[in-house]
Image (cartoon, rainbow over all chains, first blue to last red; front, side, top):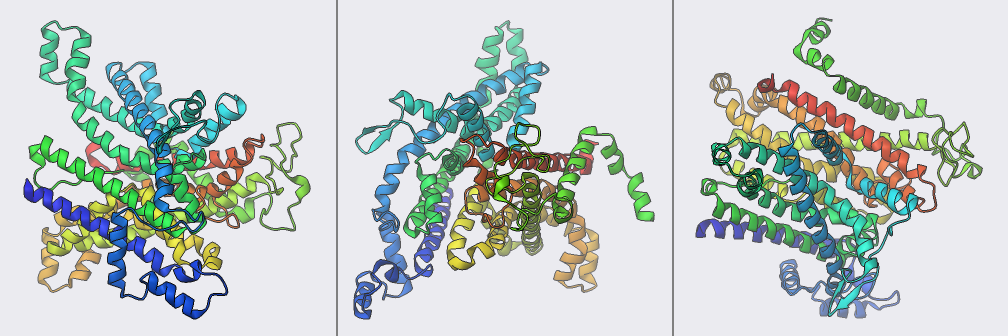
Length: 327
Length: 303
């Protein structure tokens, strides 16, 4: 067990180091940071002085070590575009992304479970067939197009919901929340639905196939023979046993929800981290890009580490070589 | 002629004819491909020839709506370009990027998979570990990061000109692990078979064994993955272009067109973004359906 955990931790650390190296080379090979910082009329001596004060005259590996040390403290310097600390910018944007991801994830789990159970129990009903067909189309539609179509439908044709922004937000210390106002909730509906559709269809299909599998087993037949109600059999016995794969897939999906949030946030101009990243790419705002790159990689590495360890705990058969899947 | 006759006698053709959904999808896919490939010949206008467009024709709705002009079947955008023509030219870029990216993934993935499977040992574990690590990140995120960050290394004034290559590279680089895994698995099976041993005994070099003997026997599944990946690559390209890290407005793909049209959604010019969107959906779904059918048709277990 210990060896497994250590090997995984070592691998995660290696990945993070590689990511940090990419972020580091962004700073070093894209333009000259000194030229970006000083004015047009700076003398060579001033430049040299700045170079030394920034530590840019030291060898590459020393600079890299300093970069990693700063990154570990969450220090990525100043945003080139806004002239503010990158860590502050990210801290400001994080609540928006996390709230969106949380609501979308909850929606996906709830909707996926309900529809999955329904389509498994009423296999041949017209509604089940309809849901399955729609989910097939849903999987092949690009996320941003769904967002645009929803805007066209519910914000332009039927002016019910706002098409961009986060609505009114209340600030609680450094955390800003849209959960406390009606306009915040109204603004959340379209982005959250857009973001939840893909994981929802995945969870639905997974729950359905797992349920169908479980419903065929002997202990379900035995439960029925004991005269238990349908409700007890379906939810007490069958659904409970489909939960292990559903939980792992949902965990893995959490990461892709955060990744896809980049697209959804851009469609709805949602002021989250993904939107910040896209803006920083367009303005070549290197410090912000580097910080986002490191942060998103950290999220994925952590999620995968946890899922890997959970697999190990839950299923002893997998204690040999385990690779986590992703789509 | 013999090969053609054999094709029409084959199981594959028979199962193709028996599935109306697949035939429809294949016809639609073919229309998309032809419309894209022959855009300069077939398109009613050349939207990128400044002599042919006129601002007087801007923001016209589709023909069947009030104020529509029969010369512009699906309407025009804010610069007076015919939407149908921009869609055809845009599909051309989208398809070009998708196919080139998939070819790059295949070359990379099949190559690494063959080496990993045939060489085994340390080489194998390093290559497959890399594939595992890459698979833990969603493909679209990797493509977005490579494209967004990769373009920073390109000089500013060359960014538009090189956008096509940056995006092909970024999508191509994300697809390889899937091929590598499949090919490695198949190679592990093939390399212990007698024909490979025989080749080794008579002194054929490892490179030659891999390419001339093992490779042809592992290509079946590669074909299926490739078809499905073309659909994914079309989506990936559209998403990147939509986000502004793909094709520039001077050389728009379907994603760029949708992204530009989105700005006019709120003022009521829905056709600028909806029609390219529909074209994208039709293209992706039809390619997906053909790929699904191909997977089932080539899988002997399902017969």
